Length: 428
Image (cartoon, rainbow, N blue to C red; front, side, top):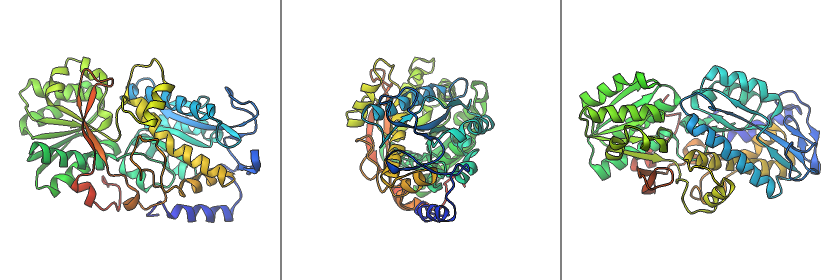
């Protein structure tokens, strides 16, 4: 299926063909005459604000203990708990409140574990409010499709623009890297680019965007694949130091980024690094690599940082008092908006089954992100070409900023992303 808009037709056909839910649960009538199936109960949520309301259970699968993104994943997960608590405090969704605390699982950033824990919870949840990681989520994608389970990714691969069951937000890695290269050409005059990246959907998608932009702008380009682990960065560091590219587009985890930047600088590299958004963590400014990071590094981003003044950012900070600022919180909060919009639409349609939520999601022409993304974001009824969000931002390291970065470049779309035709995921 080429475009997301076909999904509404597809779901409608499925509903006509069968009145059973994705996991074989027969739909029943719930609160307010709304049709429900798996993951929705007439009993109140465990920590209900209003005990007279039913409960929508949403699942979370994240990197919570030992994987490379745990410093982002824990704040993402906590932020989404706070997001849905705010929804419940404001009256819930229709005759229901939302629970995101009962079915939380750790994937250790391992696709097999991700699939295993997904199988454990899938019969008990209506949708996934978080599925962290591109390669990990790819491991459950066929099952998400067959059970029509809408999911919110904690990742930005361009694949999500082509997947009916996935509600993505912000610029994908491919667009982000295209914009990064265009920015570096226009503002820094770079002539050569190297993508240093992890293998798989995350790193390969960013590298693909960097390559597309380099070719469009007439730059030399090289791609260097690395793997997670501080002791595994020797090859990447050697490549940067020996080839001396003007710009390195870096797509790793934060710890690996610190090793690559710090050691390349120690060996005399004087070019610039711009990291894809998950590469950053404010802890990098307290690492031994901090002087090199401040001198050589910029950060690309799909939305604005923690301390931004918008309705959504303000609500997020109010819902998370006393936390140490981290843009994992920002990401978790932003990602939750499309699922909230889909659930509200499904209740309005009186169909809170999995198929009903999927159909509702595909009716969304925009999502109210409360100012955290520009208007026009969240068009899930359009084709990938029309619906892909193409704006990103550039930040720089800043000790004085709450999450260690301050804004350099407002939301922009570079010429490469503006002209690019999204006919398939960039890395394929």
